[in-house]
Amino acid sequence: MRATKLIFLIFLSSLSSCYSTKRLIRENDFKTSEFNEQSLNGIYNNGLNDSLPKNLWVTLKSSYSNKTDTINLDNNYVKLTLIDNENINVKLLNKTEENIIDEFNLKGRIKDNFFAIDRKLTFYPFIPIYYVNLETKTILANDLNGNLVVVTGRVSEAMILMMAGGNRSVQNNQFKRIKN
Image (tube, rainbow, N blue to C red):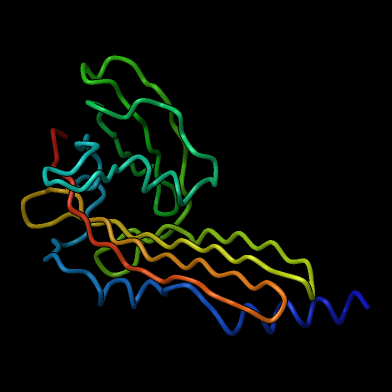
């Protein structure tokens, strides 16, 4: 019985998979510079300059955890530090850049001119009644002006009894560099 459930889960996950790094690179709308460890390290604006309420911190945190932050994200900065070729440290700083509000590390790898964060998969199975599949894949790079380019692919799917639905999206965002 346990082997049957495992085979069924593998079958379900093979029907729907998240975006690959190569596909996210193709979906990128911005021109990027050659990848350089020092160019990625820096402090970036947490919000976009347009009317979209999008935060860099929330985007990167979604690749780390499903928990929703209750932190006031207005007027904060995000500091990225590439620790090595497989780890990046993310810190949320206050506007004066003196206090660290929160921090975490993300695992990934360098591919082409991007740092590809490892896919975050959340899968809630209760066969045959329902399953929920949530996946996030994010890649980071710098544009020609040093700003941060973030491309995120998301898949959210659910099946209850024999009815299913879901959503797939790719978002391209560019966050302004404050300083190195």
